[in-house]
Image (tube, rainbow, N blue to C red):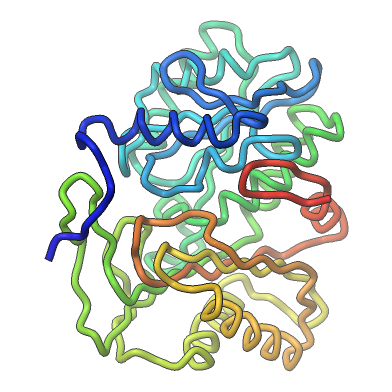
Length: 333
């Protein structure tokens, strides 16, 4: 059965979505050029800027993270599709303020293709840009093959920590190294219980029996590796956190950020129950839960499920994670 949605002409989904978002958060973001989202109050001259690109349909990501302490420019594409390279290049030009730009790319083929071409255009134009690719999904391939690991919610961790470093006035090389350090020390695993639908057609991406769930599901319904009977909250938490800890080889005494990202139809009640069990397991293993976050950061319409993410933190990364931020959907004092 097709999902009911309040939309107008499906061809107008993206411009109408972006217009409404910008109107709602006009104190923090605005639309410029070819529907590119930028900070209403730009970062001070001489500080490194952060740019990203993404398909729409994942709200509040990623325009929701524009603001002090995180992103400066977001280049949104069509629903679940990367923007073209010319628009990414336009975003890089808009971000240029003299100190260089970090381009954050989620590891999906379309995003990487657009980013790589835009980087070539930026180099010809004399712009100073460095790229970091976030590849945190542990489900498909081993850690030794990051090129083929999908980018999930871990991109937000990179944006927040690198964004804080940029606000402190660190150089592009320093911000890039910090971003790479975060990207090298994180892992994400998703679980799905119900499918999202495409907002234009209303048709589901996949089907799961009512008594089953799938661990390892991709952002857009890509097949996972762990279809099984629906588990309790505690059992689901145990399965997922242990896989993440094993992948990252987390040891007793280390510090972790744990982030739970709802996919669109899973309640905060459920995610808090999951987080409670994660904290118990980490305590048993003598691993410090140094920071935690639970919310819908990167959704896929009304998909049921969530992404569980961990980042290994040192003292500098923890400080940067906790640094002030002021974006429409991410705020820290």
